[in-house]
Length: 176
Image (tube, rainbow, N blue to C red; front, side):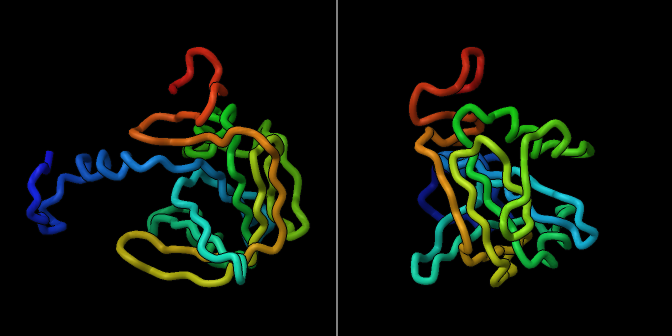
């Protein structure tokens, strides 16, 4: 654990410990979706989502340069950010899993921009893929909001390695 007030060189950081520090900041949980150039729906769980600007309406999220989905998201003209509701922990885990058809058995439909929108989420934000910035081992994708919808429900939150809710939403036996 690094309790020192002296900054450590980046190479000296214990990555697991740094992850614990980052985990002190609660984030919302999203599933970002698009289509491959061949038209296949793809999506992944993401908690690096943030709003950027209201004028023009912009959002951002980041993706690992090592993600098998990287090229599809870089080439896609549009993507959607599906902000999960507090009862969608299983959906978050499904879209974080590897080597499965993430959309199998999931209720979804194409939005107006042709990107997959997941049913039952707290909000859906359809974006035009606008700008990207490369830094470290990730690329930051910025999208211009073209359409959005939302419901008045509690969002799913992730902090300190656990799924959480802001209210009493998670079913018994789930992390909170």
